[in-house]
Image (cartoon, rainbow over all chains, first blue to last red; front, side):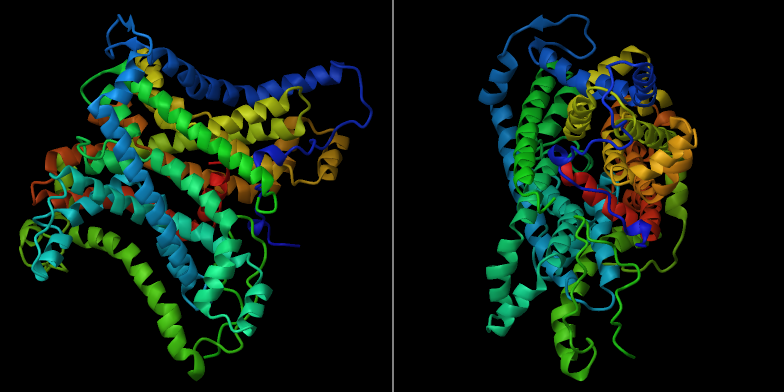
Length: 323
Length: 309
């Protein structure tokens, strides 16, 4: 009997999980017998509350966002003007819109790259079988579960040019602290560093799982053939890890596109850090009350997210051995 | 001391359901004379650096929360407070109603998570064990919902909830997040692994669906339910954007939102950092403690849940 707590529920990809539910009567009966009607009633009683909530607070907003996005509408106002695609045109042609796109691209590129590279390095360190690595693994993963607001405040204090530790360290080596809070470019660097710190544990743990499922025989054979550790890593481990890498690439891009808590608490005005999600919030709730324009950015963001997700599902479908 | 050849007892299972055990490849322990140097340089040093980078900022938060204002403002680095005091915590208490925020967070997290876990149990059971047409379509719709980030739904949800008078109410904070795609998905995947014979036995005994759920399915699903519950609790506790939008009065703010208010009133003024760190300890410490005790479930839950994005 295996330890039940270590039973990992099937992580089969959504498309492949098609096994019919057990408990079916073997004989195919007429549709809507009494039993079938009773089952349908039970199904609705069990599932309807959740399904209604999902429909109301997840699907309804998706549709409404599309409607809102074609309005010139001040949040709280009773009247709105239909303006067609003007909001979309504004986003893609105005300086502010393009700036938000640029910041989203930079933030995503560097947080994804940083978290994945550092995560892989830490996974390699965690994969060496030494006592105490369980503790290290917990420490590395811990920031991922902590409140983004809390983490943001801890690091704001560290980055404070006047009273922070980082400024003090820089002064010891004769440097001045960058104006992390005032210079928009440095603000972006700051939130990227903190975001990577908070999320690299996730990449490390997923990579560690990938590393541990690698065939030791292949690695051992290469070792006997005289391949050094570096060669083994680049010629064997890394190529074999490519499904993990692709999975992480998609999920971390999705996560970075949704990053909000850290950005909002560390740079409340969003100067230099207004990624699409943050810009959408600022436009509706940051004083402008531009509901239509905010919804436009949400729609665009959702389209990006769904494209990425579909790419992932298609890929996982093909690589069933990974799932 | 002999080398520990057995696997570490607290070792978390591989996140992506990798059940392959780590093949033993060491011939000698890490602390034998031949391996000691390599162990320290190749094994411990990177681990130590990684651990320190992750832990030191959090330690700094705790230490700073006990410092006096002049120690915070000192141009020389004060590592440890000379006289640790709770003054910052008291100041945080009086500057903003921290106990109120804490209570609000506990209320919202408790009610929200309990309902979500129950909803997930019922929905997953229905999806797996109850006959119904269109089940596949419904499941796909739940999966798609899993991919919709809550951030893109906030504006329409705000318009709806505010219109119903839900601003600055507990139900306004809790209700929009109650539908649970994550828990439903995770539980459904586990239910599919339950042998049908167990269910058939219950059916022969004349048990209805409700009894089968609570006396047969739920008891054997405790580890998965625990994982879902833990991840849900942590997510609810940390939830930020929705409570931030739907609350404007301190009496209904949760801790993360309250900290934002505290940051607005105390932040960047120098001496305020000690107070702010005290408040931050209160939002981070509970999750850190829960994580330390139950990290295996949390890690596996979070890394599996993301399989679908």
